[in-house]
Image 1 (spheres, rainbow, N blue to C red):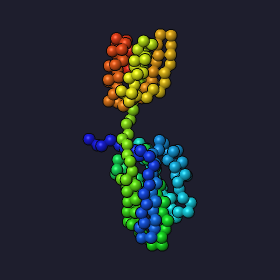
Image 2: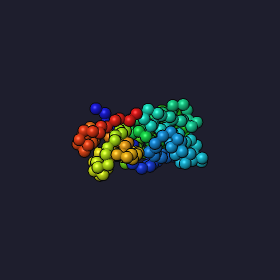
Image 3: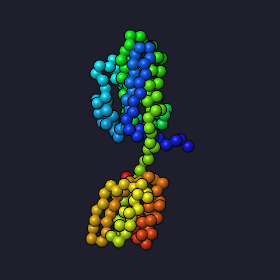
Length: 198
């Protein structure tokens, strides 16, 4: 079984000097492509010779060589992300050219190496994918259920009240759905059931 994917606990950075060129990798957790490109706009250095980057967000990914020879910067950065089991991250590697050409292989090793080092040193947290569920329950069971939500690592996404009870929509880790369904059945004597969201 594969290890669970991780993301960054907080932004990180690492730098290296390679044959007089300076490389600075800055990494951050991101929730979507817009957040990734916003991070690039924030940390990209206009004084740098190149600001190469890559992000991975689930099945979505993009990378840029920003003027370096094709395939020598963005792709090695993405490979560092994937190779270390990260998701929902954006890395920007700025290079200040030092006058000595590194060649295609040297550039790939430099960009991929500083990206990998940045991720290796960063604090990682496991990504927990949550499932959305909905259910109805009477008012008498509502307070007990809400008091137990932390036991299930559940987030309350919505709640609506009617004349005889409430409807809740929660997000919780998939392995805990069955236990929540059992608690709900116990609290309502089998009258309420969990429905999975889309």
